[in-house]
Length: 146
Image (cartoon, rainbow, N blue to C red):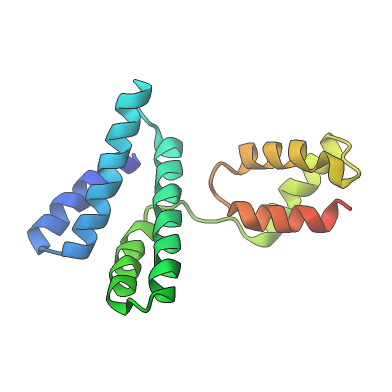
């Protein structure tokens, strides 16, 4: 399970005294625990991946803001932490695999125009379950639905 891997890595990073990795994994673990307490559930790998993606998105936004402000020291720090989070993501689907799923959903839902975008997107997201970037899905889908 992904949470077990995160816990093992946390111990490893403590022993190595790897500050960037330790900060990234501690924040991730804290966010997971907070979500579990708030929802009174135990997160599975899919739930952990959602939190992971949220954290990665926050870091990418921070990198943009720090770059604009000329804070290269903070940019490097965020990029370093981001590097340690990426390894927990599931293998992303290729564009070809994604296109096959999107084509299946479009034909199953008889989608013909951009008005059907929302329902097709929802179903594709359900089938890919975090294994594809949402913006990539959206881009492919916009090209297929006119």
